[in-house]
Length: 426
Image 1 (spheres, rainbow, N blue to C red):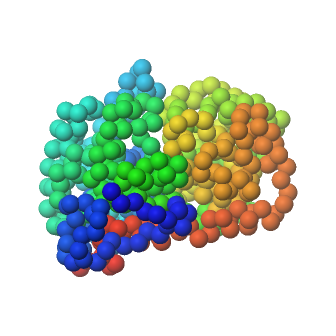
Image 2: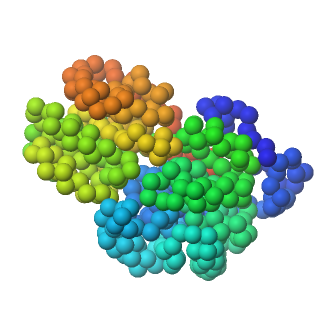
Image 3: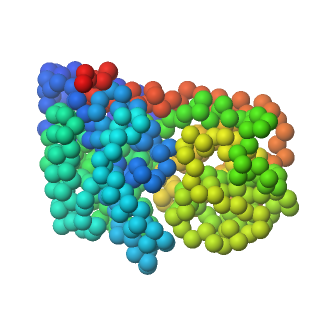
């Protein structure tokens, strides 16, 4: 197999070779020479559009690609069966997936079509094959309905690989957004086998984590560094907040505000660390905004902690802009080491002081972030950040992400998916 030779930081996402060229050494045997552009993208997503954070990278990219071609977003079929032994809030997960299925096929305001498939909620070789057939049949019917005749495939969730392996695609892109085999609630060895099948089938594999990129670049046909973008103006415009701009839910809270927004999962967020930070505050409030995917009862029991359910993506900046310090209280585990939280660039675009547990992708930003390796360091960093008084730090943080546009990334991904530069007529 051929791999890219440029460093992750320097490697460009170049379009596929012009149709009609000879097969190059290492080209996958299913490459179609002289093929016309794709007229649609079928996205086998890693999250559910209806109840996950729409700030996710594939959410950002696919919504933008909907202006170039018809995009069919197929909600995640998951990687594990929620059980009380492995998963917190098991009943809530079943209920929200059922509600998602009842929505049928709907169109997002961007023009993207969203569908939650029927599937077998089991995760073994036989179930993957059955679900592959179910997904293929549903996707094919929806493609006919939407007029997609020459689809490309975007694959994030590895349990959907059987649907992609036997499909006919203009090109296949594997979105390697996380090291799913490290997901603590799944069968790691089984998922790793599926990931290898994804690497073998995809013409292009895109990475956001350098450690994972370096580890797998020899396994992929075409491994490419993608990284993350950010809605820079969306976040930067909200900070510093103007008088009267404080949302009602935060207006009367004791200051300063130490805050976090995002999913509260037991494999990413260090709940014990958050409790320690709350207890260390002599005054002020810890604000936590986001979906509750674990039991946070111990945290909200602290008298100076306020939790609020998820808010629309459009409203996130004006709420976050009220924070005096923003937190990234990650667990130190294999999952975190294999990911790259989008929240980091959003925080940097806002410009306020940030305190984070160290992880691989933080390293290049440590000159503008208060980084810590453990609980005591983290708590000390929070108090150091609260006393920060240098206004130039706002622009220094923003400068690190100023050129990281989701629009630019989406254009490059669209080229790899071989979709035309302009939306097809009709």
